[in-house]
Image (cartoon, rainbow, N blue to C red; front, side, top):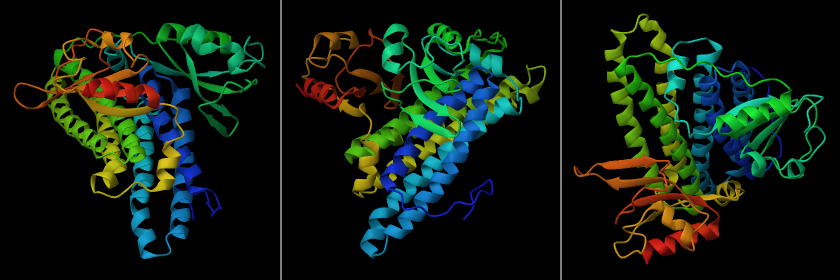
Length: 402
């Protein structure tokens, strides 16, 4: 069997759990890489997206072959059907990320305007190749202690054709290793220079000066954040067989669809004020691909929504992560109601991170606050989407019910 690039892929007796785990890691990394390639107009990052997209094509074929071999009886076929849906959804995320990276590779327009609206606090990714004279050469990640010293994390390493997702503390850096680093821009630039020996180039974020276009760009960035959150929640819904989390994925997808409609209206209005309307093509491309990622997240959690129990092999593949996502609803009698997120630091739930809050607005619609700050007020009925260790998230859930 051949993949989309015509590469022959043969069946290998490989663990489905292992394949699904790698697909999950690649799907999540691809979202970050593709957007970062756009935000920094980084052709090298866009090439890494292509490499990973090609790897995903191979993995999805291997996964389908293994699942076909496993489903010999009707009951097995029924339990494996949602797994095939997850495989297909991961491939869609990969393809959408590749389409986002095309904005850089094919030099579509409006990149500076897109970057101009990037919140200063947001983390981005950079691709850094370890130079022969780098101070990090030959040292382990534990010895460098990068995250503690700088706040920058090495989320993946490519060594020739091999990828290491979530490298551990004992990983030794070699000359030519391609590090995918995540962090805030200033420390990220400093680490990049130490790794490569060259300065981190930042494009000048010029403003388009068109109000409707600014709104359109802002809506795409919100769609991106919601789609990423949706993918995280979808995998967590499968891990915990949680209909509540799967429902949140559906809620996010509805909001992304609404943002997509508003984005289209703002972009069409802006077209009459832009000197070259064709330059809007890149932004349209990004929005359409982002909406595909949101839809794929729903497909990952679809089996849970339909009442299928999560297949053990999927739960095992997702459970590899040390951190989990969970949703908890604030009971009116909870001690957290009336306070702010900063109050969590003084509770048993210290260490957990609330990455989103959903609450009902006055007109009955859902309102999302993504990346809430310490001053975010907590109200009865708030849905908190939290990330942390299993124990810290469990403590938050107890406080929310108290």
